[in-house]
Length: 70
Image (cartoon, rainbow, N blue to C red; front, side, top):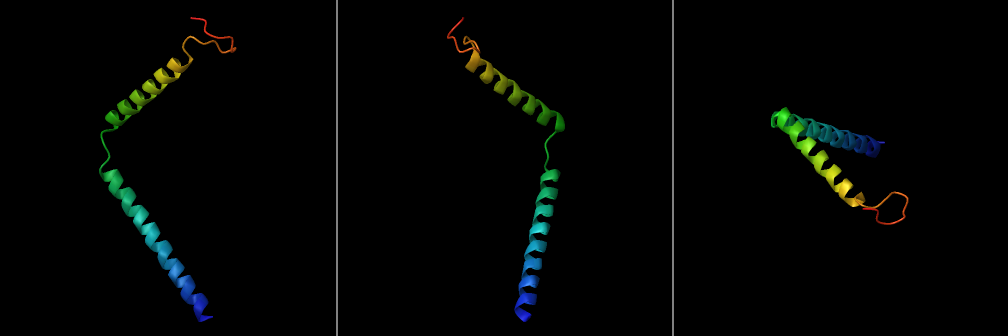
């Protein structure tokens, strides 16, 4: 019986430490967030470049699989 109680206590302590660490880490991240406008601009640029890469992969080839049409 004592072993079960000790195991549960250790498990509860580990969970408490993990929850405390994650909340501390998230608070620290929010405190150092960048300018929201800059974050939006960077995400927009990432999406634009991804769209350019996607277009370059399909440029000149038709979707029916009949070869180069350009």
